[in-house]
Image 1 (cartoon, helix red, strand yellow):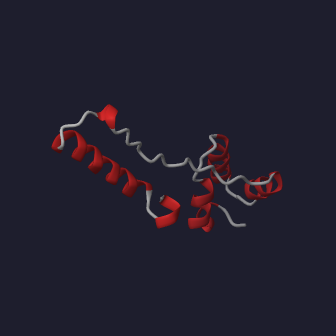
Image 2 (cartoon, rainbow, N blue to C red):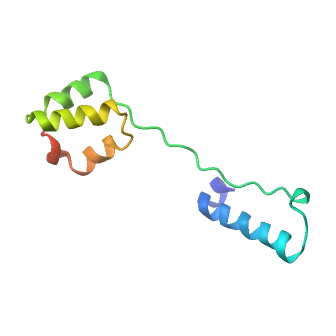
Length: 95
């Protein structure tokens, strides 16, 4: 239904909660009689860089503190590292 009608997961969960409320509170039915599952949001995988890209990225930082921060973020497997670099690439280093 999410793909067919282009609905978001939160919209699906809101509809599921409304149906649960209707059946439990208004109609007085037990939950075991109508199993309504919540939509689970798929987890996003971080964008992976090739070794050459990583080496080029670290080498492009002229300031040692910036290079250390970038290496720390990468070592901690910061999922939004690619997003940070795409938003403000000149703030940290010049590629």
